Image (cartoon, rainbow, N blue to C red; front, side):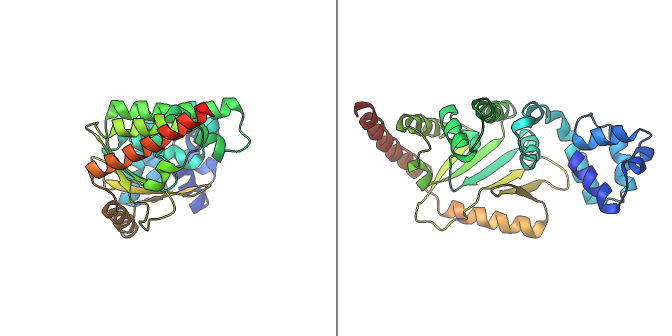
Length: 277
């Protein structure tokens, strides 16, 4: 929310002092609000929205972000290892009713085991200390635990090639695939394996749905060093169709379980060979 408030202030050319007068506070108060370091008061957010001439749709989105600030404690505790573009997604995950994620390269973070997550972080984030790696892994674990409490429906579309791509030891992949197999039996988790020959986008896509508000859904599209949050209908339709196409190229439930079992057999053999070798 602080990022949004700062964006609109700078878009209009207002200073921190201009915004401070509106909320009857100091420039340091506005600065802390924009950095997410101070709790936001609904009255202050409303007054700034009026001052920035936000549209009704923009005000509703700001109100949704305000409602989600209560969930900011998780990323705040891991702020030193959380990129800015990911902070909003972490907030949104906790309030979503439905989450659909497609991952073309790795197992989705919401379904990663600790060992798999650790290997992925070490492979993708070159130069991190062991402490930083473990903090990122713990953040992923905490996101999973919090989702268990709020119980959104999670649909994970995983490229079949991912099941045969190991970032670490074969034994870690055995554990990871077993975790996915167990997830297929969970009531609110839907794991589908996307056929390896399918033409799919090369980047991760999230689609989240919420209970109320003007923006009842959004898409999150991640790149290497950033992400886009999509709320406009035309763009949302585009990514909804994209995910529909991915689903159409995924195995059904029983076939997905069979595909996971084949991968488990493969890694079990690999792990036995590594152990004996």
